Amino acid sequence: MSESASTSSGNEIYNLKGKRVWVAGHRGMVGSAILRRLVAEDCEIVTSTREDCDLTRQQEVESWMSKARPQAVFVPAARVGGILANDRYPAHFIYDNLMIEANIINTAHKVGVEKLLFLGSSCIYPKMAPQPIPEQALLTGPLEPTNEWYAIAKIAGIKLCQAYRRQYGCDFISAMPTNLYGPGDNFDLETSHVIPALMRKAHESKKNGDEEMTIWGSGSPRREFLHVDDAANALVHLMTHYSDEGHVNVGSGEDLTIYDLTKAVVDVVGFKGEIVKDTSKPDGTPRKLMQVDKLKAMGWQPAIGLKDGLTQVYQWYLDMVAEPIAE
Image (cartoon, rainbow, N blue to C red; front, side):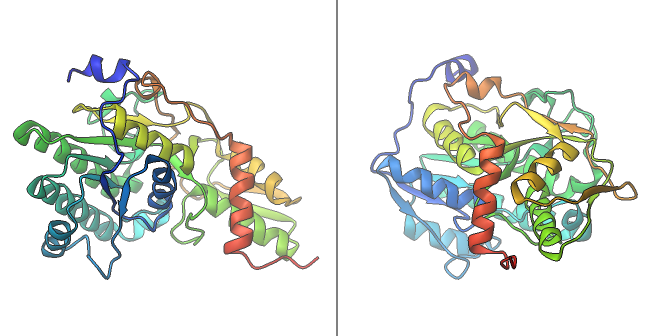
């Protein structure tokens, strides 16, 4: 199928109804969102735990997939984390992610998987990529040093899908989501991404009665965010409406500064103190906004606004993670 044919039409080209669908990494934030979304597809959902199959071990992956025989596979499984975690554990980030994707993609070919969607990350793009970032910006410049280990592994995953598509005719596709947030996110300050980190900081500052809350960097970098349920909807849409070698950006198409994001978070949490910028800490990439024309041309649009999404996630955090604030 040509690029123009696959991206300009909203027609379904792969039906999940009745299919055995494996979501690798179903316990993670993205994987669990995909599971929620697949309920509407009338398919047979297949899952595996680390006890069933360690995705970093080739023999275990081959053994499990040979028995499970999935027909469609989503691959959100990955070792993930923010700037601090990437900087502290570079070997973990590059090795684990290379092994997970290589084992799943190679075995998917061996056992005859009909369709596979590999989930990458917007950090694959060069640090100084044009904004909004088009899919064509891949491999056109140096990466952001603070997360290059993870980015290189994800780039390899895209290339694996393309290689198996070219050599064997496998219907393997790739999607590159922007910064995702939602229920099931990681709120550990050592390893979390920006929204859960800010939300936990704001909650604890409110709980402790602090007069100020400190954020990393200048607050000026611009970031794009997408609720994980919107992302899951987009991924299922790609699985059923897209078949081509080029990866597809998944995002909201809108961005804001980290400082404005912080204000939105503290407003939802109800923290009334001052926001202080620690400019001794790194900012990371100056701006990261995805060009999402390719996806939207297939008939997909996000449905959850940032404020509504933050409100929902904070309620989930209160219900599932946080220690209650004494009144």
